[in-house]
Each structure stands twice: as structure tokens, then as C-alpha cells.
Amino acid sequence: MSERAAVISGIGQSDVGRRLYRNPLELTIDAALASIDDAGLTREDIDGIATYPGSMDTPPGFSGAGTVEVQDALRLNLDWYNGGIENPGQLGSVITACAAIGVGYANHILCFRTVWEGSAQGEKGRASVTMGGRSGGGFRAGGFMQWSLPFGAPSAANWIAMCAQRHFHEYGTTREQLAQIALNARKNAALNPKAIYRDPMTMDDYLNVRLITTPFCLYDCDVPADGSTAFIVSRADAAADLPNAVQVEAIGSAIHGRPSWDQWDDLTTMALRDAAAMMWKRTELTPADVDVAELYDGFSFITLAWLEALGFCKKGEGGPFIEGGRNIARDGEIPLNTHGGQLSAGRLHGYGFLHEACVQLRGEGGERQVAGNPEVGVAAAGGGPLGGCLLLTRR
Image 1 (cartoon, rainbow, N blue to C red):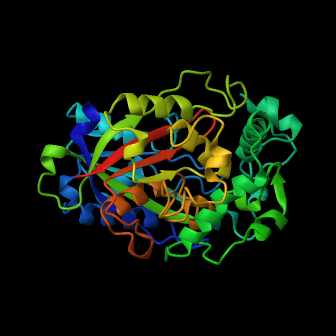
Image 2: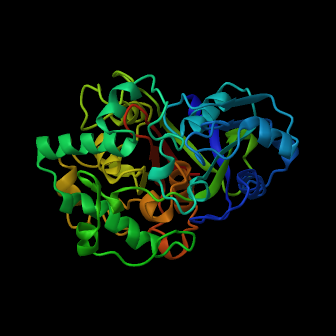
């Protein structure tokens, strides 16, 4: 498989905070230089660059920099570059970089994702900048939004909440079960010095906080933050002497249903179903081999859907599987979101999960490190009609 020609040779991350009020390009350069240094490379070695979603910035803070800005700031000489929002989820840029490595377009590709949503929102809060700060007036929606906005559903929170409601209806899933995603994240975030929210959270805290969009409460929704994460994806044979490389074993990027948030054939699973199935077809490893799972939690239900799609439990049994939190604890059957996920550590929009998977496989998790020297990890991001995942192994 071509992705096995690729390794993640370096990782880097800027400061992460609720509202840093720092220039997003500056955050990007911090993370990029850290990843290059971590790989034992120099800027002269970097001959490729990839990002998601590029330089677009709607809503405000959604993107901190595009490939052109970063190439120019770092004075890179590139053989290959790619950036854009039409990818299989946020990790699609890394998946694309693996493909470019596999066919020989580049030797060392810098992949990055920067957000500054916390600062962009300021003290006004998330709702005030939904849809780029537009509310009423002359705004005319196009695409699928023309069908959701008139019914008061402007946000992915609303769309994914309907998927969760369907899962509740079909399989009897409960809010108390779903709460374990948030409670587990907060426990892990307490051991992550970069996490936004580290104070303890109880079931009562979860159940008594305000609802956002049924069945999601505030703690089911990720935390807007500022920060940048970067990786170096390298040719395996060009990284033979790089000490921290993590092997890419398989990728998943498939979508076999309609590319729609609300017209998917099975709203309880979304495109995650197809991406996960593709990944397992590209490896001899199985879900039983995975030691740590870092699964997207833009909203808590997405994590539950990834657990089912990836085969850590059977379809429809995600609720009972996570009930009580034992199976997903750091010392449980499948340690989940060991850094605190986006629900507590902050919304780094997908890249944070891949970063944490590499940290765990490299044994660098500190207090939150999963015991037993994890050898296989999975990182996944996306929801609705977006989904991408990578299976990684300790080299």
C-alpha cells in the first residue's frame, strides 16, 4: 500500500489557549518550525506542503494561514503543495500528503492546521459569529444551507444533534451514556498542561448545564481555541535515521453515500462508516490490535459514531460500550482521547488527535501516557459527509 511509504517524522504545536490574541500566522510558524526541528530536518529539506482548509476564514478564526503564506514566511522551495476544504475531513490534508509521498512527488511534506476561533470570537461568544457574523438582514443562503437556515439550523451542532437523536431512537442510547465521552475527556485533560479546561467534571455538572441543541448540552460541544499543529510527513526510506518517526499503516477516506449532512442513507453512522471500512481493508491489523484511539469530538456523538464505525463495538452498541466510562479510560479496553479531545483540551480541528496519537506511540504523554508502550494507534476526524482516518504503528 502506498501510504506505508510514509512516516510522520516530526510533530509540533504552538501555544494553545482559549484566547491568545496572537497573530495566527505566527502560531503557524511556531508549530511548523517545531515539527521540522522535531524531525531533525531543516527548512531546506522541506519540499512539500499541505493544509486544510487553506486560507479561507469563514467563520472568523476558522483558518489561520494558507500554503502560500506559510511557504513565503518559511522561504520554502516546493516540489508539491496542496490546500483546500474539499477533503475527506480535516486530516484529508495529511492523507493527501501520504499519497504524494507514495508516488514520489516529495520527500518531506509540512502539514499544518491553525485555528484562532477563540480570539476571533472574543467576548461575544460562538453564536455571534456563526455564518461569519451574519444574522438576518440581506444574507441569502446557497447550497444545502438554504434548506436548513429557515428552520433555525445554521450550525453543525444542529445537524449532528439530529444524527444523535436518530441513534437514540434506533438503539436506546441515553444522555447519561453519551456523557461519558465528555467526562472521560475532562479526566484526561486534567493531566494535559496545554488543555483549556482541566477542572473536574461530574455527571451532575454535565446533566445540569444548559442545553445547546437537543440532545447536546454545552459539554457535548468542543471548545473554541487558538493554536496550530504541524506534522512532517516523510518518505520512510528518507527518514531511516530520524529517531521519532511513526509509521503510517493504512488510511481511510472513502465516501459511498450522498455528500450531504441530512440526506445520508444512515444518519446514525455518517461518512465515518465508509472511511473506517476502507482503512481496515488496507491492513492486516484489526480493531483488537489498537492500543489507543484519538477520535474526533467536535460533538460528543461523533466520537461514539467513530467507535462503532471502527469496530471497537458493534453497530448500535456504542451507548452500552461507553456506559460508566470504564472501556474508554486510559487503562480501559480502548483508551480514548487521552489528551482531553476538543471537548476539554480545545478545538484544534482534527489535527490535535493525530498529534496525540503520535505522542502516545512515541511514549511522550507524561502523566497521561497510556501504560504498556502502545504500538498501534488510530486517529480520526470528521463528521456528517466528511471523514478521514489513519492507522499508525510505532516504528
